[in-house]
Image (cartoon, rainbow, N blue to C red; front, side, top):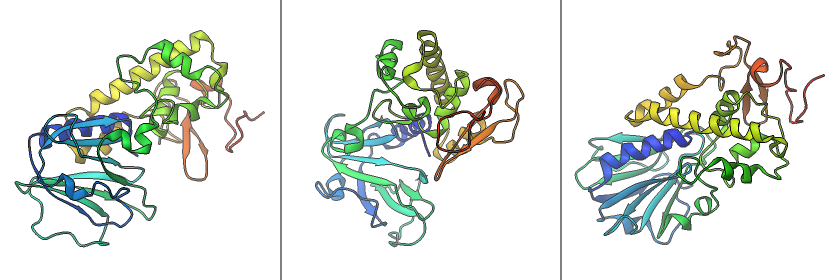
Length: 291
């Protein structure tokens, strides 16, 4: 799933290629992809793209006379969605229901991009709205961890009173925007913190360590992703991960074997030596260490 660093890189990629160019057609090809009907996608046709903005894991294309104008095309790539840029799109309109293509945006000069989604679980979502905040997922977002106002005190306030595991809190988009399964693993590894630790139990020093790990991990990932074309971002993300998706491999910090806790539709990875005092976590939903 694309997370904050990759979506930030996509925003930069699209800004260079879309701003100042005119939308010719919006062509949905998957029945499930379009989540709104008013305004219709055709409302963007003939309009100039004035800005591309990131909201957590959402991307928004603004049209109109200024950056705040509308309508906006907002999309969330979900777990298996991606964006494919074409300097020259095929002249033939796409056929609905054929392959992974979900929606095509054609520019007046023949360039454009496709939104695609692999697999059978269709979660990629596209919205045509007057303002990005009209999208429920955008309206519910917590603060952006890369925003200037996201300080250690802000993080402390978000964690205070949270009786959930810190892993789940970091992934909750209504608490902090943009962090998903992969980067929450990376942040907790950098903070040397168990993913099962209760957020409310963190000491002042632990919250300060978590803040530093969060900021450093995300900003370094953004810098690694910056300047890459869309097609290369998935591979680049994998090369920068130290524990996520590396079950059975040695921890790059201490050399211990990276372990995994599996759930029904996801998993987390961690280093026992770095994060849990050498003890393996129970590979089940209960948040307790094996005795």
